[in-house]
Amino acid sequence: LKYQGIEAAGKVLARAMVPLLPARTAALVPLPRAMLRRVRYGTDPALVLAKRLGTETGLPVVRALVPQLWWPAHAGSSRNRRQPPRFRIARSIPDGGVLVDDVLTTGATIAAAAAVTGVRHAVTATRAGE
Image 1 (spheres, rainbow, N blue to C red):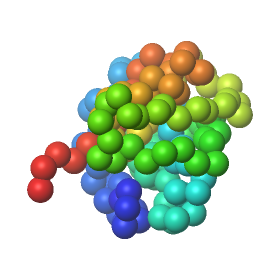
Image 2 (spheres, one colour):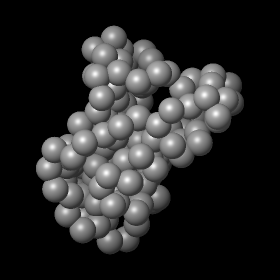
Image 3 (cartoon, helix red, strand yellow):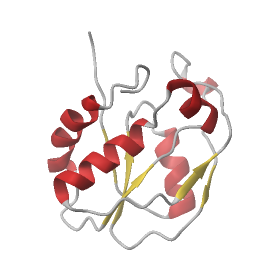
Image 4 (cartoon, rainbow, N blue to C red):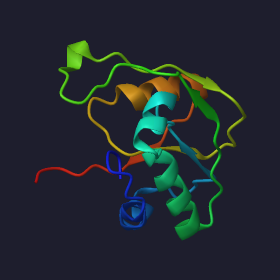
């Protein structure tokens, strides 16, 4: 999903994420990929997951965050070399919003999004191992 743009994987991952949603979830808020990476890979994995979760649950997807044009890649970087991305808010998020991302490594990206939105819950899909 993330690097090969196989969006069908989002359906499988979203089904596994449904039970992780808090009971009072009112909206799904995807953490957007840096704009240049979205162009390069042809997909925004968190948006795909949020849309699939929305289809599975009937919850609305609120595209409330706008990413930077680019930020340094984190893959393979140590914790102290990672710089969290910056987001700005494009629209309001209803109470009960949940952040949706494709991966959780150090938590810096989710923490950055939570800091600007005030959202306190997040779900991610992470594949571990080969």
